View 1 (spheres, rainbow, N blue to C red):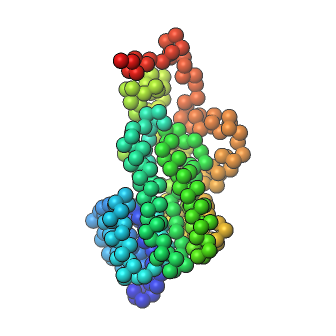
View 2: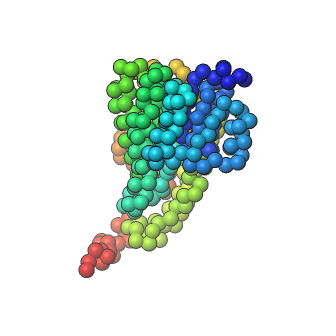
View 3: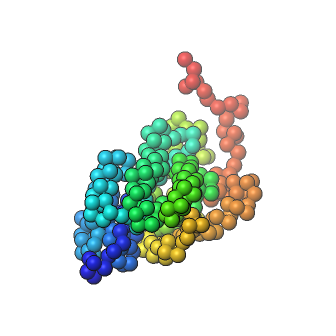
Length: 301
């Protein structure tokens, strides 16, 4: 295909693998010129993008404002617009809410939320020039108390609130804002996260740790047949093409709509029971306490 066929422009973050890589290929199939970014690219991905053509890769750390401004200025000079600003980069952090470290809190929110806000601020004029679309990679878990994922789900809930407000503010410019609430998708985002309990944790007792060690396996079992990323990307772009100014959320991925209705229709009690039973963690934790008290010597001088 000639480069003159590619009149629309997309900038996508987090594109070296998984959903982001599939999004790049799907946009390319639809004759959209793609500026693909990530903190690093494998040789395989770089070669694949090069062979497809009309895909331009940039090394961008989304938490580095200088990187964002540099690629913004490059696209402004070369294109003068962005039709699709797709902010896909994100991470997970598996940890109990009472065990998270300051570093985990900052790193996850910096990538999943703050970097998106900064990117929107820097790119919005280019999107306005195209009457374009801003898209976020959200998660259906924003509706759910997913065990050991308090940082991730809260960042996605905050992102969704931000997306709704952004759509309100930009609709006068006829700019669409969409948040893709993904269900179960076949990616490797959880692969490096081992389900362990810190020694200092309030959950560090045998009955709990033995069950918790099976967390990842239980989650995978509950997910069922997760959607392939190429299928997910195609279905998401199909929905993006027909979305209007009065829509913010796109539901896609295995069990996305189902999990939404579960979160809306079940009572809080039933929802909590269901979420705990996924991992086999619905039991009385106080039974292991001596004299019904937990150790606090670490607080005492």
